[in-house]
Length: 613
Image 1 (spheres, rainbow, N blue to C red):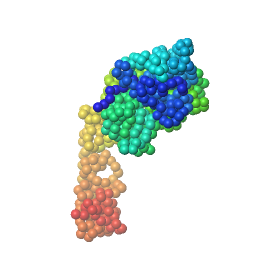
Image 2 (cartoon, rainbow, N blue to C red; image 1 turned 30 degrees about the vertical axis):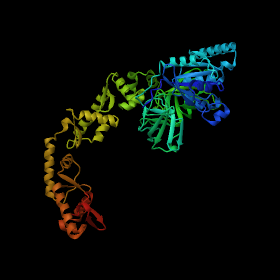
Image 3 (cartoon, rainbow, N blue to C red; image 1 turned 90 degrees about the horizontal axis):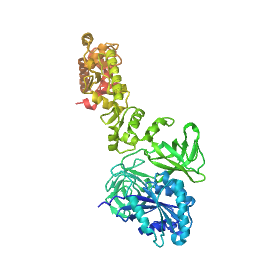
Image 4 (cartoon, rainbow, N blue to C red; image 1 turned 45 degrees about the vertical axis):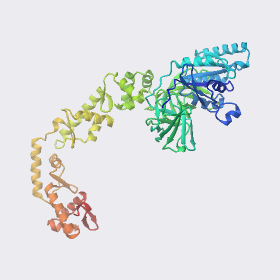
């Protein structure tokens, strides 16, 4: 049976040696220091995970992230995807540099709900606890955050009940997650277990994973889920927010590792995106073209920041920016990321992805403002214009940062938006494309009355629309009274009839060709000749010779008969059998080759296998 969904994913944060792991052990009974090195050094190096059952019966996933400055990368990875924080501040030490940095990271990632645990109260007197509480209040006020502060001891258990009650209150308003939407599981560990195989772990951001599901990696691989564990227990379903381990098949251990993302549908990784970035107050100004370290999910890559106008961003300010990554990432609109300087390695700011696949050499402020507004009425028309006129549901969902069902509902609110087959477009766009097509068809019919049809490819091009939308428009027009679509191609409905004078000219030419028999004349292309070819009454022989279809079939039969009787036929032999000149015999042999009736071997032609019987 599947587990109940996790009500809350809580990320612990705080300075090294402030007692986070001890407190988590007291709350959950789980030791989140998993590595030998962590026990030896007394610090957390990689995020540890534990399940917490809250007083109200709700389940929470507790992420114990590292507190040492060298391991901030793992702290960012652990904090990504959490709903609330448990910030641990030791009463005997107070607010420290990593306390500030951890809270900065959490706020950049949009995590502003939480509880402060004033730890180690067993190690100090009541006056020191009160001073530490006042310092913590001042620190939170400076940060613009209002959360409860609970004195607690992970050693004696004092204050633990009050802390659990505060966390339970947070769980009463769980974060909204996309349980039925896109699966996104950033991988933080990948390893092989004897008797099981390849196992990957991570915190499930969104969607649900079931045993038997096929997932996708950012590089296009398609592993299948053979088994699931939630917090170390076998399960049939992994819910959003749960600490998840997957037993995968169909993928090799060397093909997946920390930083990979597992998805329920393919999403192309991007090396370039537009964003709104914000620089933290204590940071130095950020110059246009600066190189930074960008953290997203369980990945961190170097990136270069390009600012509008080529200026610089002042501390405490925000700006649009184009971010060029040195390694591609799987990003969606609305994703949060953290920026750190390369030297010294400190958190300087972060931002939100607005456009994961930008077009043009520079960011378009009007487009980014529309994306930031979140208003489909503003976003969709601009998105359609940038896409060339049309988008399908999946493309709209990515632009809007919504699931496909939500994107369909949002599209219904956009004035003038219509659906053509699988595509969405503005009615005005389709009407203009239809006019362009009709004008092209009518002009072509005037210039080529003998054959007024455009090929489907030519008609598609005439609309000026992307191929998929053009096909949808042609499908709609196929049942109209303005356009005819047949096996011959696409034509204006009024261009179906051949002018009587042209038909008369074509019939006179046909009589002339019948008189020429197997000695076809050389002719210049004319509408009358094109009409005979369209009627399949005439065929082209050689470069410029034309004969009737009946004459061509008789010559082909003559060649077949000669080959069957004599094993093959030479130019001279066909000339004699037809009682004609070398010029015509040569043309007919080449025609037979083109028809696939004969193949040349030395100076003779022999029948192809298809025509030997």
